[in-house]
Amino acid sequence: MTGLYIHIPFCRHKCRYCDFPSYGGVESYIPAYTEALCREISTSPREGLAVDTIYFGGGTPSLLTIPQIASVLQAVTQHFVVDSHAEITLEGNPDSLDGDYLKQLRRLGINRLSMGIQSFQPQLLHSLGRIHSRRQAVEAVEYAVRAGFDNLSADLMYGLPGQTLQMVSDDLEQLFQLPLCHTSVYSLILEQGTCLHHDVTTGAVSLPPDEQVDAMASLVHQAFDAHGFDHYEISSYARPGRRSRHNVKYWTYVPYLGFGVSAHSFDGSVRTAHIANIPQYIRDAGRQSVLAESVIIDTKRAQEDYCFLALRMRDGILYDDFARRFGVSVESEFGKVVERLMAQGLLEQTERGCRLTSLGLAYGNYVFSQFIR
Ligand code: SF4
Image 1 (cartoon, rainbow, N blue to C red):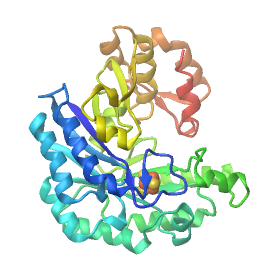
Image 2 (cartoon, rainbow, N blue to C red; image 1 turned 90 degrees about the horizontal axis):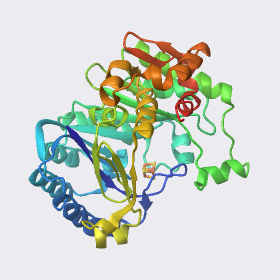
Image 3 (tube, helix red, strand yellow; image 1 turned 30 degrees about the vertical axis):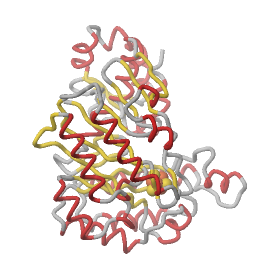
Image 4 (cartoon, rainbow, N blue to C red; image 1 turned 120 degrees about the vertical axis):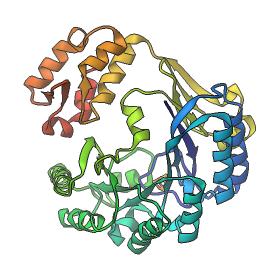
């Protein structure tokens, strides 16, 4: 079944490290944007498609009011066939998640929350430009549990300016006191054009040295392992049975359909991306003109994409699945690459194929690049 992604590009404040398609201070567009989303969903040519995951991502989807989220969900259920056990996730930031709002979200059918916590250290939250406090993060989780959510995820970051190993350890200790069943832990990527990039390049702040970031990564892996989480994807840890069903679709080459500005879709053979301009989207939603890009994925490219996406998962490349999809073997297409990466200690054999080793996890981008022919 397909997954739906719905992009909400609004944030109260732009974080200093963020290069996601999100904008601060333009919340006045939200009502018209919500209507445009409903229009785009209701006129999708994929009417009747079976859907088993819906993901409200951002930006900060929790800036939408309950009636606005309800209207988008209604457009979805009227136009698509939504599985009765669908995973319906909404991303939110702790400063926009209060008890009453969460109860109403749960009543609407949202059954999974993904919270942007990032850190519990006040000075790091401040330097990242996050506008929530440690207390708000803890309270948001408590409110969510009281509202009936039992599928809670959080995002955490390491490799931050001014961050020490002890701070990462404290964040993990705090995190494991919360009833979360999923966490995505990201190493900071310094993106060009962000305020933080400017701060680092002008010397106003400095990043921890690489060996310290590696030590942080090891600490994170060991801590989640010790707490019984399954490290099922490079950055993702889940309690048993609590993998993100929506995100797993991206990594296992399952089609998905995106709505809203900057949203991407993949139907198995074509990838498309929407325009990023909010006023233009509001005007044109439902028309072809919201498409910014459309790329036909030929077999060669599909095999490459399949391999490096699969390698993000701890299950890795499944040789029988590859052969079933493409009618050729991994051995015939990438045999030499796999052999070389194994000799370098970056890939290891599994019962059904191959996957990244612990060393390979640290050099993921290099490994992925080797599959591009
Ligand atoms: S809340 Fe998330 S999407 Fe919004 S600016 Fe911060 S990091 Fe970016």
